[in-house]
Length: 453
Image (cartoon, one colour):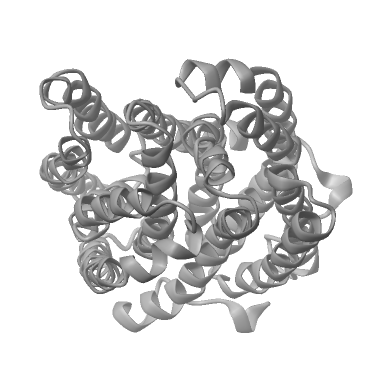
C-alpha cells in the first residue's frame, strides 16, 4: 500500500493536498451515487411518490447515523496523531479498537433504526401516501448499517495513513454493483423502493469486506489482525473524546435538517419530490468541498502529532481556497444545468422541477459560502479541539436555522424564506469559527514553544 500513500509532513502543501483529496472526492461522489441511483431508478420506473418516499428518509437516517459516523472521524484523528508522532503501539491499538467499535455501533443502529422508523417518519409529518414506502426503505437500509459503519471506520484509518486511493477503488466496485442490483430488483423483480434499499445494503457489504481486507494486507502499524481485536480503554476514550463532538455536531445538523424537511413537507408531495431531487444533486457539490475538510483534518492531525504547527495555518488557507473554488465552479455549473439534471429524477411533475430549481438557487449556487465553516471545523478537530467547533456549529447553524423556522419562516411561509436560512447561517458561523481558530492556534503555538524551552 506504500504506493498509495501521500506524505502529509513534508513537501509543498497545495499539490499534496490536491492529489490526496481527488480520490476522496471521487469516493464521496460514488457513495452519493448509491442514493442517486436509488432516486433515478425509482423516478424512472416507479414515479414521483416513490422519489418522495426515498427522499423523505434522508434527514432521519442522517440524524441517527451521524453520531456514530463522528466516532469514525475520531478514529481517523486519533490515528493521524499517532502516525504523525511515530507511535506504532498506539497506532496498532487504535486500529484494533476502531473495528469492534464499528461493529458495536452498526448493531446498535440496526436495532434502534428498525424499531423507531415508523415513529420518526410520522413525527416528521410524512404524508400518508408516502409513509408505507418510506418505512420499508428505511428499515432495510438500517438492516445493513453494520456494513456502513465498518466501511467508514476502516476508510478513516486508511485516509489517516495517507491512503485515499484504496477506498476509491473499493467504492468503484461496490458502486457499479449497486447500480446493477438496482436495475435488477426494480425492473425485473418489481420490488420498488425495497429493491433499491436492498441493493444499497448488499453493495455496502462488499465495500466493507474490501476495506477490511486492505487493512489486513498492510505491513505497517495500521495492519489489522482479526485475532487481536479488542477494546483498548485509553484508545477507545480518545476516539470517543475526538469523535463524539463531531458526531453530535453532525446529529444536530441533521436535527435542523429534520426541522427543515418537516417545513418542506408542509408544502406537499410535489415540493418534497423537487426538494429530494435537488438535495441529491446539490450533494455532489457538498461532498466535493467536504473532501478538503477531510484533508484538513488528517493533514492537521499528522502535523500536530509531529509538532509542526507552522504548517497548520498554511493547511487551513490551502483547503479553504480549494473548497471555495470547487463550490463556485461546481455549484454554479449545476445550477446552470439544473433544468436538464432535475428531469433525470422527476419525470411526471413539472412543478416539482420548479421547486427543485429554487432549492438549487439558494443552496447550491451559494455553497462556496459553506467552505470556510466546514474547513475551519476540520482544522480545529485535527488540532484536537473537537468540542469547540461542535458548540459553535450547533449554535451558529443548527440553532439559527431552528430559530429561523419558528420566527422568520413562520411569518413569511414561502420556499424562498425557508432556503435563505442556509447561506445566512453559514456566513455567521464561519466568522465565529475564525475567531476561535485564532485563539486556539495561538494558545497551542505558545504551549509548543514553552515545551521546547
